[in-house]
Amino acid sequence: METAATPQDYGTTTEFDYGDATPCMKTDVKAFGDQLLPPLYSLVFAIGLVGNILVVLVLMQYKRLKNMTSIYLLNLAISDLLFLVTLPFWIDYKLKDNWGFGNFMCKLLSGFYYIGLYSQIFFIILLTFDRYLAIVHAVLALRARTITFGIISSIVAWVLAILATIPGWQFSREQKEVSRYTCSLHFPVKSWKTWKQFQALKLNILGLILPLLVMIVCYTGIIKILLRRPNEKKTKAVRLIFVIMIIFFFFWSPYTLTMLVSAFQDSLFTYECEQSKQLDLAIQVTESITFMHCCINPIIYVFVGERFRTYLHHLFHRLVTVHLAKWLPFLSTERLERVSSVTPSTREHELSEVL
Image 1 (spheres, rainbow, N blue to C red):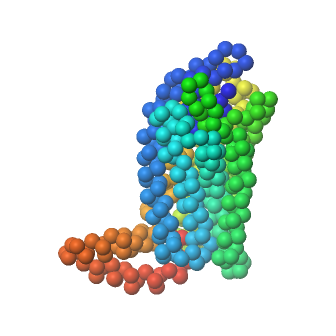
Image 2 (cartoon, rainbow, N blue to C red):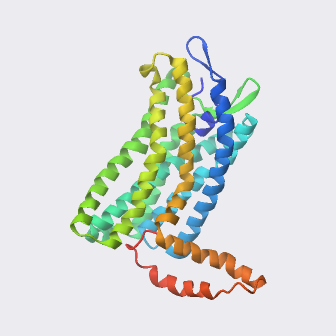
């Protein structure tokens, strides 16, 4: 029986799902995925790859990783990129309806998928806690919000993400089914339901309940401080992280909750075949929405982060305009030089804007 938790599973939903008795046909669900997923994955990959690489370039070139916020944002972009590099393989898998990359790549890419997923969650939590320290405990923040602590906490976040990934990585494998090869989760037969429920509960605890609790606690304290002592710079510093957190819940919550319902569908529904098909369809749709999150953060930075727009504009001039000016004399570099003279003087205002 196919189990659900990764893109390879719902990118290739089987036509039949054999339960305890009669087969449950899922041809229509599979056909829907065949039409929806390849073009969507391709679009997400293209936008997400360009956007997150630009974020990494801006952070490395201009922020210089001089504070915890920059370190966490860099790691968040790397998490997105780790998640994104798996998409071309799932696209090929879906188009050919056959896994042709071997068992090692099946496990490796499944691992990247899960590590990217959980590391995104942990770095968004760290970003929220970082804002909380900076606003609510400003004196403590001077000692705690150091580059060293940022690096150590980032390493811890990656280690936790890897540990959370182990079950999904362990049970993902290539398997021959009739005339094709698949790459999906294969839990032990005797305990497959228990493992499926464990995976769903873990995803909801780490991906929904924990971030929600952190957001409620941290932003309650932040809002109290800002209401008591209004400060425009601090408000701007909070705004970007708050938007990132809200967007994260908007894109991830439908998927995590649908996975939870799917894991416990035997206890919730009577007509298992029909409900199973509906849940498979719901997971395909919500997982597709979840994948879009990989290319959303750079867009948020452009629209919410005023300084990021300035840095991006400056980077564009350095990488494009200067080189074009060598062959196109009418493109003057005077504007670039003016931007260059202004940018360094603004780099140290850490609380004025996250990016």
